[in-house]
Length: 251
Ligand SMILES: N[C@@H](CCC(=O)N[C@@H](CS)C(=O)NCC(=O)O)C(=O)O
Image 1: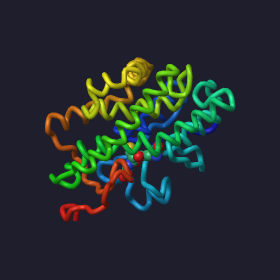
Image 2: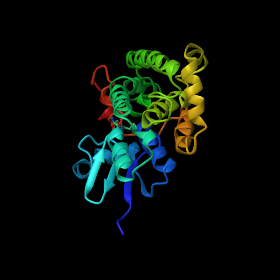
Image 3: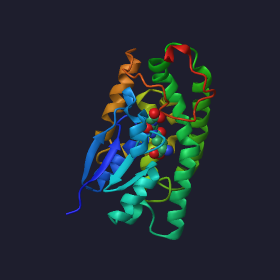
Image 4: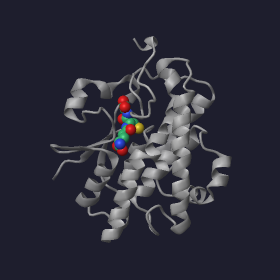
């Protein structure tokens, strides 16, 4: 019997949660491997050599085969386990639109993660300083993304049509972090009612809450003013930095 696939992830990570939910919703058996992003396990050269040169999660290991980047992992699962057609599209057009979303997601909505990262994690890593420019940049990208999502959701119930696809899990879990960290709230929902309706529907899906437990706990800790025990130097959202300059404290 083939050995189980291994899913390397961290529950605070948006793309990890999207893949995690796909695995659970489809009853795919897997070994659950949490990578300790908090102390930089993923920054060890041995980790990068073995799994992913970027040091990021999620990562999927299937025997000798390793794949990273959440849409690529989800696509691999879709093909390997012959998942229902809704996840990656049943027609050429649906497949193209879902791919379109995945590319848009990583260059637009994902970059908005800076608003959450710099509000809640940066101080724990680099100490108190002015992160307002980074937060503003993330916030701007997030607002633009919400506008685009609202327009899509005005036409169809889900981001890529009338059935749920992997695009929805990606988009949903990106917003979950912002909700947990109170970056997004009532004024945003009022401006984007279709996004809110979609977000609420996604929240009702099996496993949506289960995979989001830790990010809500982390959001609550930060809002209570508690520091997160995180010492590593790299960003949770690489590429969101306005300038790579890191204060001396990092040492
Ligand atoms: N484009 C990647 C993004 C992955 C990503 O941003 N992973 C973050 C967690 S949310 C990470 O592993 N960060 C660790 C680090 O940068 O040190 C995907 O979709 O899989």
